Amino acid sequence: MKIIFINQYYWPDESGTAQILTDLAESLAGKGAKIEIFTSKYSYVNRRYRFIKKEERNKVRIYRLFSTRLKHFGIIGRLIDGVVFSIMSLLRLLVRANDSYILVPMMDPPMLGIVFDLLKLKKRIPIIYWCQDIYPEIFLASVKHQKTPWIENLLIKARNHVWNQSNAVVVLSTDMKKYFKEKCKMDCNVVEISNWADGRRVYSVEEEMNPLKNAWEIDDEFIVGYSGNLGRVHDYKTILEAAEILSGHLGIRFLLSGNGWGMQRFKREIPQNLKRLFIFKSYQPRDELKNVLSLSHIHWVSLKPEFNDFLFPSKFYSIIAVGRPVLLIGDDKTEIARIVAENEIGFVISNGDYKMLGEKILFLKKYRDIRIEMGKRARTLFEKKYDLSVALHHWEELLDDLHSDNFG
Image (cartoon, rainbow, N blue to C red):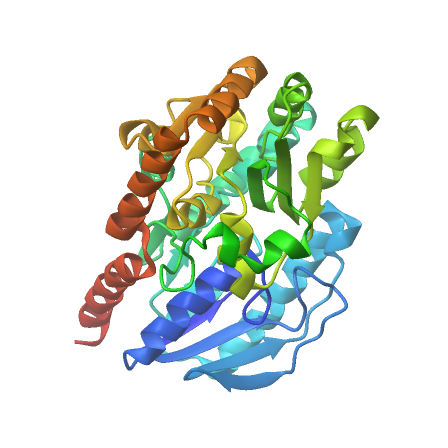
């Protein structure tokens, strides 16, 4: 089986999509599939990095294409980066790919599929679109005060048309699948395969064995953690307001490791008298993830209600991999809320209900035994449903079925 994955970012980049794609590509290559990666030369995390043009790692051949690096100039910069990468990928595929391959674009940049529809028409290559976030809906929801309905309809109809021509669209959650099937009325094969963490690499590290505890000068305090991108879709104001009412309680601090649009605004909006409560760290190397996550006693995840149907917070998988309770700030009708509540691995707090959030933080600080039991249930759930090995099995089934249907 020959597969080409396409995404702007791949190993050694530390971004979320790069890590997920690296896991899947190397796992499939280890089982005998011929895997090629088309990606960009530049890092999502550090724009000064420039990776070598062509290399092989763990039986995966990596081709890094010409691309621009303007994302730090805002939405227009990201749009230019995406267009250039899409065009360069198409040109490379026209030369490289043939109908013996399966093509899996990972949808970074968004709307990448519109470009590859031309390739499918020309070469009849089977295509699986791997949808991490639903665009253009996320972008349109984030600029809700500047809507232009005819442009919205045109973009969504173009996306739906292209994806309906595909062999499958992989989404991360039931909510995303329901949105495509019921609201978009899409006729294609929409398959739900959740993202994951690798339980061999992400697990709980005992406090006394964690090298970051001393390195980051964390005392015997109760740590409320957040790790990863904090973007436009995430609610940080509820945690900030909760911190204010918790400021009178000794021994509680907030650790945030990562970056993003929301992280920068979060830092700016912290009142001077609360700055002592917060510890900010940049993205850490992947091998440090277990240590970073294990420093916190509980973790928070958030989602603004207008984005409920369009994504699933993938940081959730690593949190439960290290066996920590989850405080979800968001709508209780979302899939992640149902998972947290039904499995009793944390609490769901409505957006803006900072008083309830503060109460739950104090509760989990006070009742250690309950917190530990929640963490154990979280790890058990992870091993059953969200480990890399589980997702790999689902991907193998999908790819095997597609290979049989197209290549006999």
